[in-house]
Amino acid sequence: MLIRNVSLLLGRELDYINTTCVRISDEYVRSIGNSLQPKKGEEVVDCEGLLMMPSLINAHTHIGDSIAKDIGIDEDVESKIHPVTGLKQKILKNSDASHLASFIRSSCLSMIRKGITTFIDFREGGIAGVNILRRASTGIPIRSVILGRIEFYQDFNSIKANSPIPESKRSDLSELLRNCHGIGISGPNEFSDSSLRYFSKQKKIRAIHSAETEQSNALSAKITGKSETRRALLAKPDFLVHMTHASKKDLQLVSKSKASIVVCPRANGALAEGIPDVDLMLETGCNVAIGTDNVMINSPDMFKEMDYLWKVSMGMKKKRLSPKLILKMATVNFSDLLGGKVGIIQVNNNADCIFIEKHSIDLEPMHNPHASIIHRASENTLKAVMFGGEIIHGKI
Image (cartoon, rainbow, N blue to C red; front, side, top):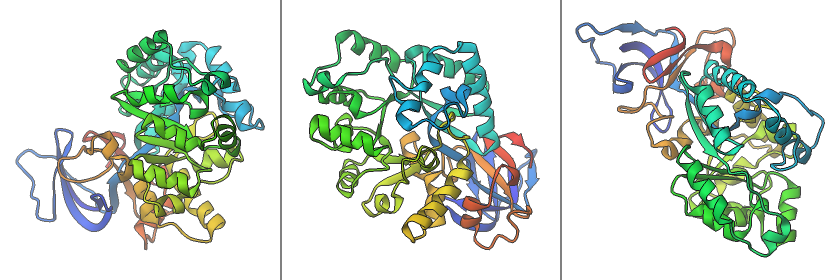
């Protein structure tokens, strides 16, 4: 396929190119440039008036709780989503697997319509939970990166005694990791230092929640005398989720460790847990991405997430984050963790793209493309979504 006369957000810097041509074949971007000419028998598509950009990466979801939308809306964060005692866990354990799969599937389709073609999910329920998500997403053109979790948590006495993970649970973890992409750890307050260090030895993706609430930070200090983030880093995570109440010292440690951070500002706001200080994260050299978190709490909509982050950061800090930086958090910044072939439009990368109508009523005139995308674009302004070189939603 040769796409002609298209505007483009190119490469790692999302540089705006007003008009160019893009050749796609065998699921990949093969060439980019104004001088490209059609090959014999090649499909040619004129995309005048469209902006082509990387499809969105939703870097943190809990898609399993799609069955529980807006249940317990006025409950506090611990009552809602505590990994052991929360309302969410009770719902998941008491829901039929076929019902869970049906609503997971709906959320996958919803993400595609919103320009998301890759999502990274913390999946509860051990191997059974992983398999539900795998079955539910089979046949849907979306990339699901599944981070599983064994059903094992330690109490405060075990944490203080630095008790290791029992052999039976180590076997469970090994079996789990043969069936998914990595491990999504609930948080350091549920595990001893010994257990966190054991997680660090696993060869697949490692991720962990940290510093989501003031309460969890205080609990870590009370039990161990260490910050929640300092303990989370014992697991040598590829990324930490939330970091809403991380100190500057914590963020410097994260930056030094080369771990990334995934912020979920709408979820934090909905749970009255504050707003992540993304400006400080960037100042300390952290790589930051964005996720939408629990479907129970939020729709999996990255356009809403970018818009909220941009405006609430300005409202709280009186300092505006760069629109391009926010857009990179939803695309480029998680690319390397996923192999470097997604989230960036460049030659030899996956042809995972979205096409935005520049002349849509909400966008025209588009004086600042990056700003327009993060706070004016929506599902309604998408003309089409492409995954692996195939149009999977809409048309061009």
